[in-house]
Amino acid sequence: MGLQCEPCGASVGFMPQQSGVTERTVTVVNLMANSNYTFMVEALNGVSELLPNKRFYTQVNVSTSVPAPSLVSELRAEKIEQRSLTLVWREPSHPNSSRAEYEIKYYEKEQKDKSYSTVKTAATRISVNNLKPGTTYVFLIRPFSTPAPSSSLLSASSSSSSSSPSPIDYGGYSAPLELQTLGECEYGHSSLLFLDYLIPTP
Image 1 (cartoon, one colour):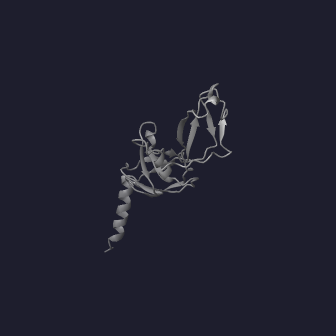
Image 2 (cartoon, rainbow, N blue to C red; image 1 turned 180 degrees about the horizontal axis):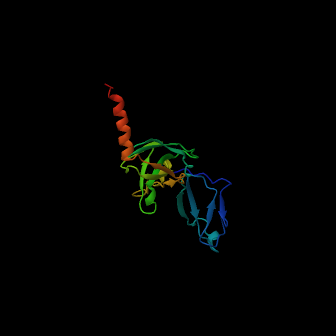
Image 3 (cartoon, helix red, strand yellow; image 1 turned 90 degrees about the vertical axis):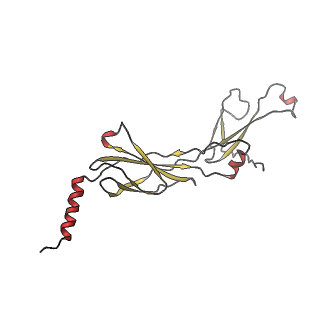
C-alpha cells in the first residue's frame, strides 16, 4: 500500500530558499516533531524546461524525533537501609505521546570522576541495591523517550531489508541528591533497642 503525502504547511521554511538553489545544502525549519517527511530534489539546467516528460528526481525520506521530556522533579528517598535505598519522584509533563522511561545515575560521592552506575525503569519508584553501608551516594535522574512505531513509518521502510532502531531522546538530569546509607553500628543499635523492647522485665 502506498503512502499518502500531504503538502507541507505554510509554516515550513527553506533556507536559503526552496527553489533555484545553487548550493548543495538546504536547511528546513519549523517541521513537526515525530513526523515523516518526503523531499524531492531535482537538478535543473538550461534545457530542463524543454524536456518536461523526462524530469528526474531524487527522493529523500526523513523522520523527525520526538521532543525530550521535561525534567524530573521532587526526587527523594522513600526508604534508606544499609545496602539499599528506595527513590521516588514526580512524573514530568510530556509535550508528546511518546513512551517515557527513566535513567538513574548514581555514584559514591568520593568517586564522582572515576566510576558510576545506571539503572532504568518505566515506573516512578525504584529500589537501588548492592550499596555500601555508611556511604554517601549522589543520585541523578533523567527521562528518556522512544517514539512508538507507526504504520506509516513501517510502510515506508518495508522495502528495506532491515529498519534502523527508533532514536532515543534524553531529557536533562535532575539536580543531584546526596543520600547516605545506614552504617553497621546504626543498624545494630536499632536492632538491640527493638530486642530490649520485646524482652519482658522480670
